[in-house]
Length: 451
Image (spheres, rainbow, N blue to C red):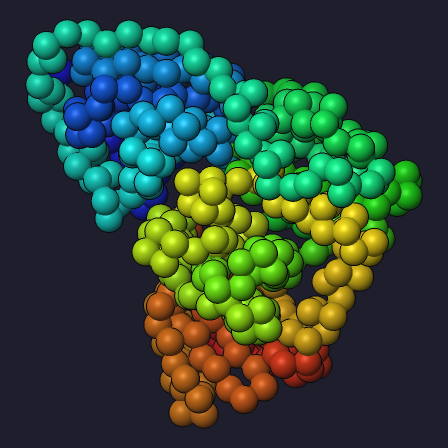
């Protein structure tokens, strides 16, 4: 193969417009380069529901086979199923063909190596890109083969191992897969659970007739909220396209910020194992730190991003890690993120406590009110962040630069960081029990940014 330029490699994965940036030739090269970089015997491959995913997956497999490795083909699945199977099969790596919540014209690839450790820009992704662009591949002793290896039964059994099914009670649960892949897993779990599922946008449809599934966007939430209210449901859950993130709505249809779900899950794991560590990102921290202290655990801060969270979790053997962006990581899930484990745990907690989700988070919301993440598109993000730092650092008790800037004061704190993928700055503000103060400081920082 001759030299080409591939411009769809990002910090943690591959994402690009099909076919201009990501096409069969690029996918085949990346497959061959990944297998050669890993010196792989076997690589797990899966794909999401998008129309272009099957063609790209087949090209990816051709590259892997040409490098002499076998493909263990999961077929249509979610990103977390590739993570699970790579560890479960003891494979040398895994690649998921998915564009997650990106626009319909996009597709992409997510990578892990042995034991489902992430491959990122800091750990191998640049080498894979250089090799794929060069086209200078080693000749293998033999060709590999593609082996169909769906792993749904082991995956579902593992999901159910996180909860005590006998402790569950009948709940009415709204589930919104956004016409993405999550509906298949809900259907597989349904016979094992006593819940009544009210299914919204449940049919898998690669045209995404109801919009790209991304419940983080407020405009995508009304169908879930309306179903909760119409059916008097106990809780609502929605997923993104490849269901590695899940989002929660309480019994009144209120959207529950991911920050407070991190607290709920940290509490559950620390109740079981009080000496454990839990990992969190720097954006919103006080609630998680407080919960860890209450249960005798250790809260460990990590830079935002799955590769960083997973690395810190492995270093500390942390039982759980959570990001406020709705990524939740579990030691027993190969330290990887799952969008299915969290809702099973939250619903189990609701059943055990006999409380609705709003009641479970209300105290924590009052104790540490938070702004939620606010994004601003700015022409010079670096200058804007420096302006805010100059204004506040003289009065700050601490200044932390783990990810962007985090400044703490006696009764409030904030984190301000640049997006890794867009010309945006992202602001999060929280306070100690003073919602009015949190809102006042949020407005002040936004005013500085908008100047």
